[in-house]
Image (tube, rainbow, N blue to C red; front, side, top):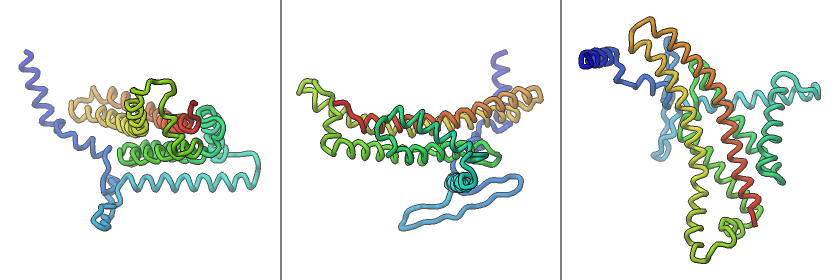
Length: 278
């Protein structure tokens, strides 16, 4: 009985093309085209400069869209404040998020001098949040599910952390402060290497966490919907759609949480570097 059932399942999977997961990855990975099926496909230009491939891709386009939306939103907020000191509409929503980042993230984690880093923290928070939400709209794409994008954001955070620590403690004072006080002399070389590696593991964790969380949700949604095609039965339709809808609603929460976590951890690392324990 087991042999017969397994053979039938294998034949069904093979017949339905389930062994080829390319259609799932097509919706997750970057591409050099914008797929608006069944309306059409827009092919993006390929650009090569000095032997480097700097072609415009789908994720690049949606990063540009995110920047454009943010610029328009803040311009609208500025005009709203000129008319009235009481924020309304977009201005009200933006003020709530700005106050949240300032009072709940930057101020508690950095402490004195947080104002210097607040513009950067607000920038990454709004950029990541907008990119995350663009991946939830029809025909949208999540730029933050690209490891190159998250690695770049983490690298910028890494530079801000180091520059902040050096500005406050001096170049030699900052790196000297990485070594805990009171440890034996023979442990100093080992501790220095460990702490130096720790500087690079922090941005690595930032990049992988954001990339993995924004990619996983989309794969799960596509896999659930793919069960309808794979199993070829109407009985699985309501179950697949219900679970996919649940994951989609969960993705809205994940989009908010991941923007918060990336900003909060960046702020925390800045605070640790800026106010070293002596």
